[in-house]
Length: 516
Image (cartoon, rainbow, N blue to C red):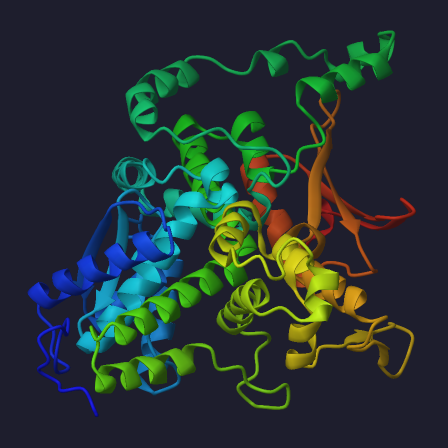
């Protein structure tokens, strides 16, 4: 017999929502998430926004507080045009990695959809943000909102004091280097916005009346020719500057001679924001997969307990299907693997192997298969893995067959692709490794580091790009980025591309060769 829409146990009926229904639904979803899935979350702050406000959030990288920059306005106009022309839809929600966790819900959502995105964002994403080791080590959820408030007000004061053009020139250069403005291989210092605000005035005053002693003690070029032990001093200089340095913005912030104290602080602001988003780029499959698994599991639990009506559940399943839809490779909508779909499938596969394993599962995953502890396995995976390691550890042969995955060998000198591995006994490991490698940011992003500074002569800054698989930088964007580096450094900048395996120099480019 069909459930009645006005059954007393239902959390809501109809499509209209109000704050009472939202509060009641959240309390029920949260209780179920903690009791059944053992989630651990930050306190939640939910806000209702319009479609225009959602577009505005898109333009400012999803943050509730952000400084002004022309690129944000350009991005807003582009997104607004696509939305009005029907070229794209809007996200049902937006969630901020902060403490409390801020969740924006669209006011146009129905009540069933509000329940779905509440489970997805306020519980799934929230748990992942709080417990995943990358976010715990590399971001400070408790300080980010107050730091952004400080950053916004500080840049506004700089615009009033130094002019909009001067501030935008620094922001343009810093934004261009954001990809190379993060610590990848060592932990950055913890963000403390309170200490930053308290010490800002003292630090700026000190910098205004002093300069770097390292530069003051440099011998002139003529003296250096007469000095002995130049090589030893250069080695010591590199050691004192911690070269090579992977974080280009950090190096410029600490060592540029031409930056005034306020410009140095702006570079620091951009660097901290870039570091804040770095873990998210490494965990898209896991983060979205976790949130999708949580919302799908919780909504089904609520339905089985007669807390959601059949009509609401059908609407929830329709929206869920839209989220995990994976277009085929020859579909015009195809843009790669859908992280929602892959993440959900892998987590449900872990659940299946824990409860109903096959003989193949027992061979490949002896610690998981048949143990029935899927909750503990998922909690451990969400806490300790990123996309690359999660896929390398948990992608099963069963899922490889379901997704029909195979590996193509793409030789630059060959006119055709070669199918190198298929979903068979010999190919499973290679397919899993190839897919995992495709999510390894360290392997797929350009490896550019500061390797030297000619302190004894013209103070030329030397960068090195370690070229992997023969993939060099695009010439146009490379030259434009070098100009931005020079604007922050103040002197000549050169970039040498070397083969990562052999060390052979491929080419070298300097700002003196770039036409203005």
